[in-house]
Length: 159
Image 1 (cartoon, helix red, strand yellow):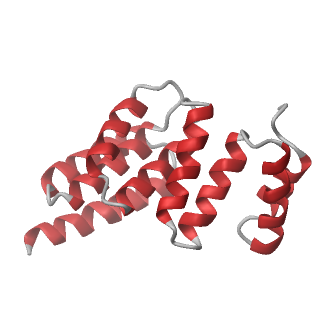
Image 2 (cartoon, rainbow, N blue to C red; image 1 turned 90 degrees about the horizontal axis):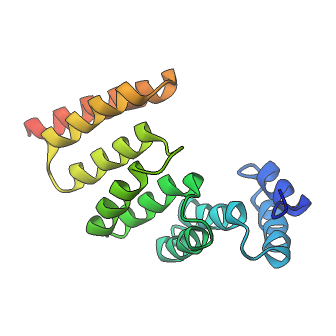
């Protein structure tokens, strides 16, 4: 917990309800500990989710992963940024790497792989990955999301 400062906790506590307070606390957290993985991931999320600045978000996620390549909390966001930037080959390679990391969320990674396959118009393969993701998922809410995505992709494949 050496990298976690009170400012990081304030930023995490305020996110996403008070972005102004989040950003202020995050600035302090990053100035205190510029290599704090949770702070870098949060900065990337803000750039991706609110500012739609995917390139900057990607650089924050890459910086976090440079500090700790096994920072599993960054994996999903990093893949999302790659997909938004149409970096499909990089996303595919990273998913393959992340799948082999202990503690990574296999269901989430299979879901991200399905989203990648959908973008490549490989609908049947995407559905297969969603089915596999359901086997690794242990949360009702996520399983429901996977089922909705599966239904949507199947409908898309028929057109």
